Amino acid sequence: MYPAKMQFRMPPEWAAHSRTFIEWPVRASMCWPDNYDELCRGYAHAARAVARFEPVTMLVNPEDLNQAARLCGPEVELAEIPHNDSWARDNGPTFVISNSGQIAGINWRFNAWGGRYLPCDMDDAVPPRLLEREQIQTFNAPIVLEGGSVHVDGEGSLLTTQECLLNPNRNPGMTREEITDVLKQYMGIETVIWLNRGLDGDETDGHIDNAACFVRPGVVLLQVCNDPNDPNYEITRENLGIMQKAVDARGRKLEIVQIPQPFPEYYMGKRLTLSYINFYFVNGGIILPLFGGQSRETDEIARQTFKDLFPGRKLVTIDGMPLVKEGGNIHCITQQMPLAGSLARSPAGQPTATS
Image: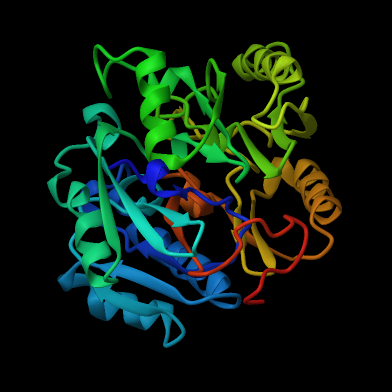
């Protein structure tokens, strides 16, 4: 039986968490292995920031246990679960919660972003191993899907991009309608709002968690580009137009909060996917990546925007540059598990039950 038929649904990310899962970096999978030590420090800093608000479990390969323990400290729990790469948002389970408060996990198929970074056999095995460790019911889904490609409002609406979910390197031969049906059956949603593309240069084929997200029901945060010479100008203007016409599962027109993109940055000749949308909700707080340098002005705009959007949450900022060099940020490296028994409808701007 499908999760939705059993009254399970994916709660919004601002609902109460019982803990956060992160995966320790793996040098062999990195785009830039020489940056391994910098990346590990970045992951440890992010994990300790999250641990100020809620429990954190770091999944670690056996050979990295000592290093992870040394950098993360005693406030971060370590769990020995093998993995190929360190993006828990994408290769980890998606947690759902029932009307009675029971937690379960969806085990999506994982093929390393369309076969881009192989091997991925251990990554594909992370969800069942983790869910077995936590003694949580597992639903095995029939499609390839990464957690960073979807965002929900907790009231039946899901935001995603055609560039990713309809990419033939994920689920060849499946139509938009067929994929929509699977999302409804497994995530308990009713309406999918489809953007066409994600940000320029995003190696994930347009994950939504760099482009736009719900911040509360009926309200979307959208990163925009104001430079007509930047490829993101056309992309983000198109996204804005689509969302201005969209209606969510409750029949509401969306309120859209626009935030300017950081200044374009390149590393080794490759554009980095800098995004303020790649932040992370924690219990009673927000972890926001900032980028410094030529982005100092947009960093300050982002800081103020988040303070205005979430007056009931403590804002903590981290240096986003060590993580983004490898292609993602704080949202990409984290996976929240909801609190069993929580209502999962707590207002986005307010502290949650476990604050």
